[in-house]
Image 1 (cartoon, rainbow, N blue to C red):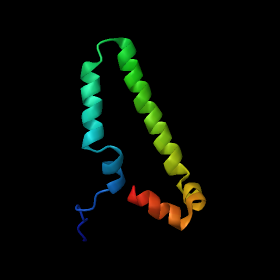
Image 2 (cartoon, rainbow, N blue to C red):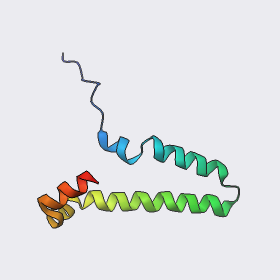
Image 3 (cartoon, one colour):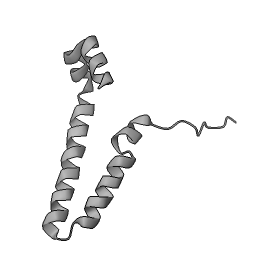
Image 4 (cartoon, rainbow, N blue to C red):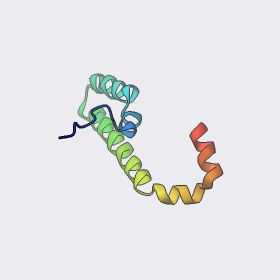
Length: 77
């Protein structure tokens, strides 16, 4: 029987939902005093999730459009 390598972690998750994003949501969530403020926070989170999903689902199109040089420039930013 082979042991599974537990040291491998998905890096994209840490980039999309890193400590800064989590701290921001927690801070804004504790400051939201009304239903309207909480709704705005939830809407912002859902909008960001949707934008990330669309971008990642269509990453091959973005890669084709940017080309090799564009991807190198984008990776430096």
